[in-house]
Amino acid sequence: MSNASECVVRYSGNPILTAAEIPYPATLIFNAGVAKYEGKYVMAFRNDYGGAEGEAHFEGTNIGLAFSDDGIHWEPRPQPWIEWQTEEIRRAYDPRLTVLEGRCYLCFAVDTGHGVRGGIAVTDDFDAWEVLSLSAPDNRNMVLFPERLDGKFLRLERPFPIYGRGAPENFDLWFSDSPDCRYWGNTQLVLGSEEVPWANAKIGPGAPPVKTEAGWLTLFHAVNIDRDKELPAWHRNWHKTYTIGVMLLDLERPWVVKGMSGEPLMTPEAPYELEGFRGHVLFPGGLILEDCGELKIYYGAADTVECLATADVSDLVALCLRG
Ligand code: BMA
Image (cartoon, rainbow, N blue to C red; front, side, top):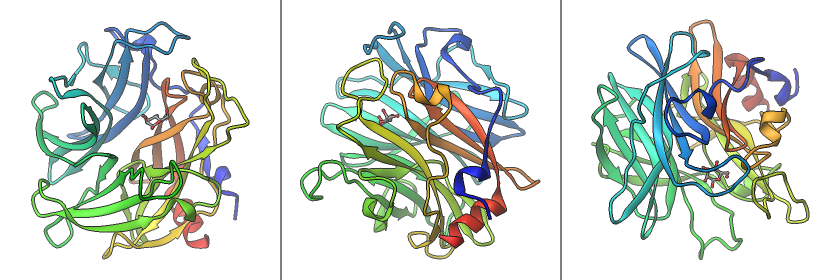
């Protein structure tokens, strides 16, 4: 069987969405969530706007929408969708989408005056959105599973404990469940960052899991920090490489890892992944399983553009089970 990275094919037309295609102020278009909803592909993407290319200063962040018939070519909506600002809330970003029982749920990170909170909202029309829960800080990278288990909503999340963890950025991937998507409990550790052999720092859930016979297949990001190596970025002191890992979670006990690829599934290598606002960053936010067994992997590249890669679901399941 092939190496992990050989199981993935980058779309030749990457990137699939950039700031140049957005009909309102946009500088960085990245870290999108993607779902199939009512016969169309829908993408909710992060837009950091109001900065000049090459400069690391932006006026704000909003979440925009784009729609597609094939999951490859995208039509952005004329206006941004969500820009959340109050006295306490500064912005919502890095959206993930999960369709569950006909409704579309949106998870996002929320920067507030008192830390980063993981938010979950729901929409039925991609116009109105209702916030269902906001976690205690610091927590981000929430993703919802597309099904309930024993009546409960299931989520993966990434709290970031700065005092209790020993190393500055060794943050881990966790699970919790909820009867109503508002009150969360049954918190369980899923994967410690030390269990990812190719990374030395934080990990976090990426795309909402996809159900297979062998288990819930899910992508995560894993960060390696090399302080001796300056990576290309629009600002100084960028030392983090973000890779994509893949694992399989137990269907009945989704906090149990049944298998994980021992190598990264994707490592930054294409020019649009190596250079941009922050080079060497791959940040997966969407995973769609097509009827033919093809997986579409959506990921932000270099915190600058949104990209697509494909893989065969049976190859990724086999990779996880092989270890
Ligand atoms: C993380 C998040 C992501 C971003 C990544 C790399 O902490 O802020 O939005 O893609 O860093 O900069």
